[in-house]
Image (cartoon, rainbow, N blue to C red):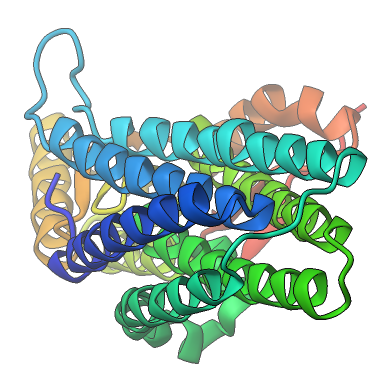
Amino acid sequence: MAAGSSTKTSVYAALLGNVLVAVTKIGAAAWTGSSAMTSEAVHSLVDTTNEILLLYGYRRASRLPDESHPLGYGRELYFWSFIVALLIFALGAGVSLYQGILHVASPEPIQDPMVSFAVLALSFLFEGGSWLVALRHFRSEARRFGYYQAFVRSKDPPAFMVLLEDSAALVGIAIAAAATAAAVWLGQPVWDGIGSILIGLLLAITSVGLARESKSLLIGEPADPELARSVLDIARRSPGVLRANGLLTVQLSPAEIVAALSVEFADDKRADDIEQCVIAIETEIRKRHPSVAALFIKPQTAARYRAVRGRRFGAVASRGSPDVTIDQNGERRASPRLG
């Protein structure tokens, strides 16, 4: 699996920024005893670990298919992305909330608050640089669909993970600075603990969003509808094809898709004619869409296709979750409820 170079650049930039930030925050937390600064230091350490795991996921996912994994290892990237989301919740949010509750129960004055402010300012610059790199990469998709839809539709977890992590880091730095200022200028150290709790809640919300999207990809999401429509159009226009019944796609990795295509061939076609038609369809699809790593073409009448789909998705429909696929007209349709 070949990962986009721009996405890897974002991950490397985030890794460098998080290493620099983590070192400065750890030193400041040890010097000042600030709870909010300690939470930020843990946050940066978790983020650093996360970037390393994402790069490891890229490396593992790039292995070639073998007999034990005939469709390849692309989903390893989705697995490690899910682990990253869990780490943000378990370590980042958990430690921050613990530190905050501890310091709210027993507030302690912050030593040398100016050190905290200086470190937070430097951290904001480091994180801001990484955030700009991630934003530049993600902006092309956001222009087409909007940021939320681009996040939901993305098949490349590191692309949106780095952006959300850096965004949470920048907001966390602002919270830490505000909490430190309130604790010092109001003379109420309890605000330091409150800041830590707010950072923990921020990380918990971020991790839940990332885990939700990563889990969906790990279980198996369909490919982009535009690709599905294009594949069906190629099949429909191929000589000897009477009808392209439908298409089932599953995203294996950001750059790999498996597709199963149901096609009805003309009645006068012999077995060797159908074989040549299938080869022609496969050749054109792979030429237009190199991301289709595995393609299965099944000769099937429209009536048989509908019957098979009905049996397969009838249980889903009966539970109130109709399946959505691409029909022969290239439109997204829900499976009808059966029975």
